[in-house]
Image 1 (tube, rainbow, N blue to C red):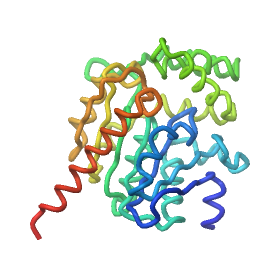
Image 2 (cartoon, rainbow, N blue to C red):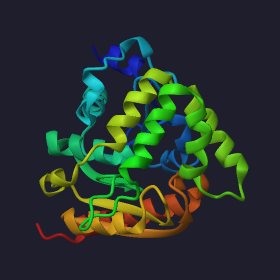
Image 3 (cartoon, helix red, strand yellow):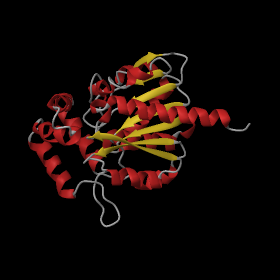
Length: 278
């Protein structure tokens, strides 16, 4: 069973086998290769784990189950199964985009499994819910994207990649993200897109007991600063760190700033544990 899970998700383990485990979970349309600029920075001190969701990267696409992945809970269960297969405890779970809410769900299901959540450009809901909540997208925006995916299995990647990546002055980043989008199985990508952009996890936030870091980009049209502020307000025990970055993928476009934000948070957490009275 453990080997099946590891193979199914193309799990890769690197770094210090005796260090605290740090698991990196990629976002919609991505795969584990997008952590290549950030994950290696933690290998000296951590047991570093990367993986692919079913349908992405080197995952076993025959394992896809449209019923299981009709909600984010199926993806959260995948993370829990990977952690169990590797017998990981006190996990630092670093998640990007929609994986931030997958991480939230995983931590609610098994809070004893995780020491910290690192939520990079998180959003509990991408759709606007006026007047109280601004998610960044109108319902018509999402309807249009899904309709595009229905009629043009790859054209959506050309549309969405520059929106997600930002940094128009660095077209190589957009081209790389578009190529990753196009590598995802189109049927699986279509369902994951609908689950991602129509999910609403605001009610789950008060259930989280795991300390967390919110990494917010200064300019991000997918998860604008107002969303990060909302999350910080409703996620007890959270710390928010805004980095001077543009776009929704700072681990690709601004890796040094992303690494520094994570390190600063983990060092502060370690210091707090050391001075805590017995």
